[in-house]
Amino acid sequence: MTSKKTFYVTTPIYYVNDVPHLGTAYTTTIADVVSRYRRALGEDVFFLTGTDEHGQKAQNAAEARGLTPQQHCDELQQRFRDAWTALSISNDDFVRTTEPRHARVVQEALARLWKQGEIYEGSYEGWYHTADEVFVTETEIDEKGLDRAKLVRVSEKNYFFRMGKYRDALVAHIEAHPRFIRPEHRRNEVLGFLRKDLGDLCISRPKSRLAWGIPLPFAPDFVTYVWFDALLNYVSVPGLYFDEARFARTWPADLHLIGKDILTTHSVYWPTMLLALGIPLPTTILAHGWWTRDGAKMSKSVGNVVDPLAYAAKFGVDALRWYLVREMVVGQDADFSDARLRSRYDGDLGNEWGNLLSRTMTMIGKFAGGRIPSPEHEAGGPSEARDAANALAAALPAHLDDVALHRIGEDVMGLLRAGNRHVDATQPWKAAKDPANAGFVRDALYTLAETLRFASSVLVSILPTKAPEALRQLGVTDGAADLRAALRWGALAPGTVTAPGAVLFPRIDPPAA
Ligand code: MSP
Image (tube, rainbow, N blue to C red):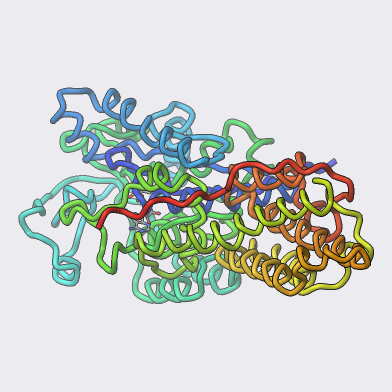
């Protein structure tokens, strides 16, 4: 008997020192939406996020607060857990790199690589960027315009991973697997990077300079370079070396979601580490773009960083999730603006969806005794809405495979717009005046209710509170669970008792000018 492969989706693990911000909230939200869709379609999903806790920044920040690094991290990681709870994130696990279940795998992997001769002792002489914890060359200092005041000259013994040796194997893998690095322009970027010589990777830091890390098992005066440690979270949690059955069911990851700033670490360091360890590579690494704020880069010093929790408090979590999913074409950059968020709220959610729901509820109340009417023609007969719903259902799996979540959002809006046009075209309140039109009215109302049921079922994964609420008003109480069954036009049972409720998206007062 073969057990089913789990769909395994990851976010980066976030630096514990930073507060959860729009960028980290975005990556986590799209991972959540993908996970919810896959679960609703009947897949086993494992959705992992967590915190990256070792390294210089955590050590320095802890010292400045008079705490041990562990105390500091224990406190700060909670902000991520709380933020994800507040944003309706349904992660299956939360990993901290300071946990023994992770550290023991890092040590085991290092021990194996050392034994295999994949790690060697060498010396490093050159510039070290303390804040970023990386060694930099003269060329990089010039190219990136690095501040020399932040660089220290070091000359020290270190340990190196033979990364360069895997360059050709990695290029061959990327070329043979078009979906390994996505989108296409990022794949080309990585191939371009690999055209140059690929050096070896320094994977240690002497304890004298940085103590807050996982000790190298073969050289206890050194700790593991924070990226080498952090990347291994993707295999430590599903059980590498410690739970073979679970690891076989879960690995390889189907989808590593990352931001474009961490493309090289994920598509060069990580796969070469896996190749050296003899572990299969992940199926897809997908890099999304960058959120800017009113056209400018977000930064703490400018003070224009978006706090997702403040927006969730004002517009509701679901509205923020909708905005993030709908506004960013996955892979491209997008601009966060209050005006855009407000217009998505008023337009998409308030007018197209919420309004259609309340109008339909009112009409079903008046003209059908509060029950879903029995249509005269099969499922309300042909309509633009029915066609839009069927097209949406057909396109959904491919959109999901492409993580084209904005396309799912567009398709749902197209369906709801068709529903709104159906109201205008059929005008049930006028037709109802003549009893001879009873069948026509029942068809029209059925079509509207079915449009809303269909659209709301698809929206459950993006708006996990509001969409089930819309379904409840339609009398559908179990519609959220099985999306496959819900994606069939005509599934709404005539006679279902509706339960009209509160307006889904009440007006929010504009900010005082
Ligand atoms: N700790 C590493 C990742 C290790 S994974 C093995 C790290 N952490 S981070 O806290 O800096 O978070 C990085 C994530 O936040 C990336 O996916 C990054 O792209 C995302 N974002 C940070 N600012 C962003 C924007 N302004 N816009 C979109 N995402 C950005 O890197």
